[in-house]
Amino acid sequence: MAITVPANRDSTSPERERLERRIAQLCRFIGRSPWVFHINSGSCNGCDIEIIAALTPRYDAERFGVKLVGSPRHADILLVTGPVTNQSLERVRLAYEQTPEPKMVIAVGACPTGGGVFYESPFTNAPLSNVIPVDVYVPGCPPRPEAILQGVVLALEKLVEKLKGGSEK
Image (cartoon, rainbow, N blue to C red; front, side, top):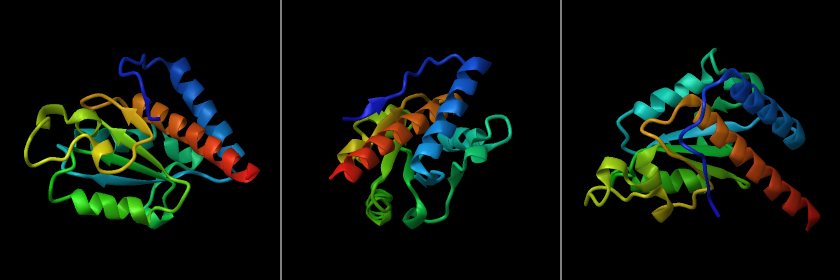
């Protein structure tokens, strides 16, 4: 079951502080920092800019260890933007297969969530859930950095649940 982040979030300071505390708690529970691999599957780069904004000093997700990595083989979370064009279809599947278990997939933006302006285009394969399993949806065109951080929090919570379930077996 995938989780959707509400699109209309207040960008108030207490909300951001709550997200930051939750990310720190989840990272301490997991015992390591979550690493993220970003896949642009044909987007307009609007979501990509917001992902970078979430990592810059204003939001500073990197202080919790949430950082972009250069290979899906090192990632815990896949951030996918774009409507998954025909050209990027196999690359998205390959990146998903190369990511070690347990892994989370976050669909960032309107395009991977439901197709956005490319809905029913013959050149795209949106939504992303038609291509790979999606754990968290972050809607918006483009979504705000706070929403992306909230999506990471929800993905980390699901990752914790996976780890708890895996340790009991």
